[in-house]
Amino acid sequence: MTQTSLGSITRRRAAVLVSALTGVVLLAGCGSSSPSGAADPSTTASTGGGAVVSSSGGSGASTSGASTAINFLLGPGNESPLQELETQGLAAGIYADNGLAPAFSTASNGGELASGLIGGSADFALLVPAAAIPLTQQGECLQFLTGNNVPYLNLVSLPDFQPADPDAQFPESIKNLKGHTIGITSIGGSQSAILRSLLAQVGLQPTDITEVAVGSPGTAVTALQERQIDILLAQPPAEELLGEGGFKVIVPISGSPDSPIAGKVQSLFATTCDYASAHPEVVKAFCTAQQQVRNWALDPANIGVIAGDLAKALNVDAAAAEAAWKKYVTGVWPESVAITEDVWEAQKLWTGGDLPPYSDNVNADCQQAVAAAAGQA
Image 1 (cartoon, helix red, strand yellow):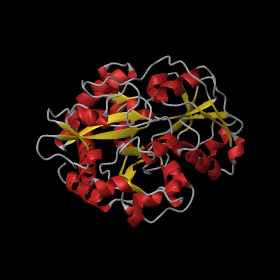
Image 2 (image 1 turned 180 degrees about the vertical axis):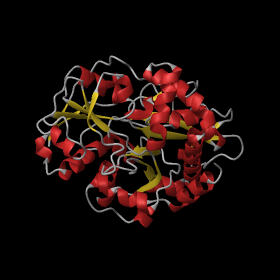
Image 3 (image 1 turned 60 degrees about the vertical axis):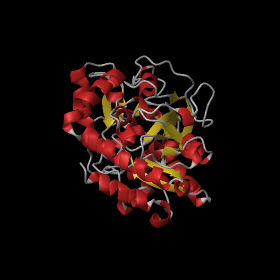
Image 4 (image 1 turned 45 degrees about the horizontal axis):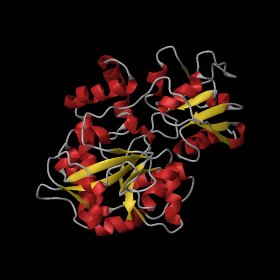
């Protein structure tokens, strides 16, 4: 599979989520726990109004009005609630209710997410299994905590693209990828694994296509519109950014019953074994909050709040944002964030090989906290 990457791509349609919060620092990059210009995590303001203490001091989660500051490393999807819900959960006060004051950092790919967590730049990170699980097999000690989203993906092109067999149905339509450049978020992550799995379904080899790293949906859409790629592996909200009539689906992955990604959680929140051992109460509070964020996001009573944030991210009106949320919500967000043994086993799709033991790598106390929080829904 030929691999390349695009340089700086000018966004035509920025998809930047404007947080409703003040006092929350969105850290740029993941080079250190306190990058130049970023707030020291031990003094990050609490949205709950209490004092903030740093988990690095071993204080544990607050039970008396103070909030524990945690560094939280996310992927490029945190610009949109279609990809990550953490900003909405913070605005709703869910983390503060659990004694946590997160400061978010952003990494550009799975390797940066894993290295940022292992290197101490973050206390918690949203990890891509294809990048993270091999590290555990090489001796790094990680504790996987909660599941994130199920991928909602289609391979799309500009309307004038002419596939070799325009009438082919899935999975035969995968053969239309041969000889073309395919835009994906980053090289070597879960989307690379998805492409390998798709190609194998129809007897194609990785060398039959060229992967191009195009970043998050905003830059990915620009790459397609400027014809720097032939086809885009589109994740939400790329189709909305392209607009009605601005694309056509070449391979309909999501919704196809034979799709290899159907129902498979593609990213997992994790911490290091050292952090989990030193701060077990903070870990349990984090896991509780993650399930409560999911409960809140899936509650129809809150769709207006999420649609408002989504409208800003997509630069569309409220009605279009609400329609987009309804389109994706049931396909992207499982009701539970638990990492069950079935969820763990499914990670083989992304890693392409054997997994380390579930009991050694998935935090049991976290799963109990998730189960308790799920019962509150």
